[in-house]
Amino acid sequence: MSFYKEVEISVEKLKNGKILLYPTDTIWGLGCDAFNINAIKKIYKIKNRKIYKPMILLVENIDRLYSLVGKISDFNIKIISDNIRYRKKPITIIYDHIYDKKIPNLLFSRNDYHQYSIAIRLTNDPFCAHLIKKLDKPIISTSANISGYDSPRFFYEISYDILKNVDYAVNIRRNEQSNYANSSIIKIISKKIKILRT
Image (cartoon, rainbow, N blue to C red; front, side, top):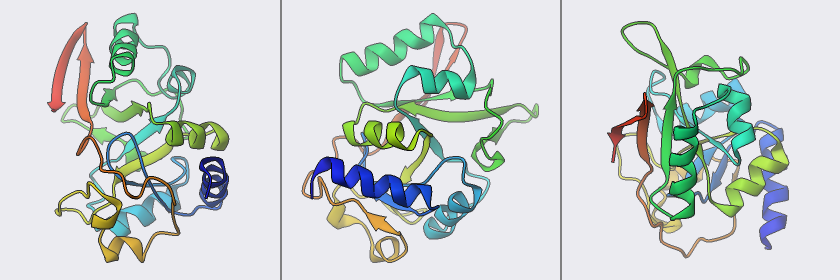
């Protein structure tokens, strides 16, 4: 099936609250409409993931990032731009200031000071970018594995327990090996980068 046909099918599934198994800029992921609380809960159930462990959001461009978190610093933009331009390992950034109130509370972390933060990655993956653009919403991205088990680097390493519970498995790039087992996670504080996951 063609790339664009897979995008169309996937978008329709997401619009209807379905769970997608799809290739990302790291490994195969489970995804849904990031504003659909019921779909998000389904992913937690599929993964047997603790509800207090938030998941990552994917956006396809800087404008959508702004719509979620408001304006970000030039330093932050440069980090994102350089990462994409030089094709480095994808980075997920933790943001403290949230602009869009439609984001479900499940996706937030809370520290000891009762401050909320959220993890967002601006994806450089063509399929993910087209999917988000056509859906016109951010999507969830979490590894396609049961919590506590290894993340699959190939489609054919994804467990039956995952495959039987998703609503649609995207039919492209199934023979490719993922270049990265995960994204790096960072937080930017006053033009300094704090690495939370390499």
